[in-house]
Amino acid sequence: MTPEQVLAHPPRVLSQAQREHYFEHGFVGVEELVPAGTLAELQRVTTEFQEQSRAVTVSDGVFDVGPGHSAENPVLRRLKRPDERHPVYWDFATNLMADVAADLVGPDVAFHHSKLNFKWYDASDTVKWHQDIQFFPHTNYNVLTIGCYLADTDMTNGPLAALKGSHNDDLYDQYDAQGNWTGMLSDADAASVDMGRVEYMTGKAGSITVHNARTLHYSPSSNSPEPRPLLLNCYTSADAKPYTPHPDPSANAYKIVRGEAVRWAHHDPRPCQIPPDWSGGYTSIYAAQSGEDKEAGGMM
Image (cartoon, rainbow, N blue to C red; front, side):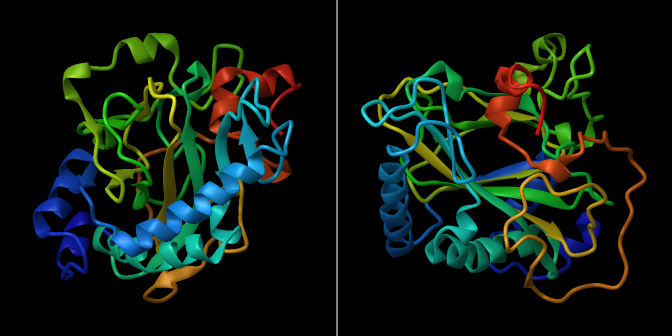
């Protein structure tokens, strides 16, 4: 669907001004949207998984851990596929967050994936400048990710930052000069980013961020010893169809969570870079951007 077609539908959660901000800038932040009871349940379950991560020594199919992770000094970077790890996460993805998605992609919404990213007091938690759509190309760009801060987030603990209007700019090359997938901009491209167009989306726990899959974004390292969890759910318009393997499909990938399945795909004529073949599996953006995948012999 086009932005005009989406905006013609009455909003469910967001204001019309918030929807228009998203289409103009490529992202929008909404403070303290999540009800207190829902937030408390998400925080409770997340703490349980943080404790479970102390038992692992290396990244596996559930936890992505950083260098130096241990039971005494946990460096949990990601809980993979939270939507299938606990019903609290899936309920959240299919209720309030699905309504937010419908406000921005239209009434027919497909779930793509979820992840729960953490920031610790460690340089490895930086997420460098990148765009999402090169990880999972679709026939159109009506693809977005909704983040929910599970802890108060300000400039001290690594908020999400996005470049205004970048969803309408050309896509970047996210391979390095040797042809290795890095999932990020080159140093030269990153240095050219106009920081005057960057907005940092801060907010108390329960605030959300939404960014289009073409939007250039990053998050700086945290300067706080307390972990900052960000629960991310990705959705697409039902008429946006993937044409490369899913990087990390859960049991819920591609489920219709609002409206109905469609019989016609919408095609955007703008090109999209093709990622590596993910059919053999995927590690994480942290591993790609830090070079851990190359050290291990290449992307899985």
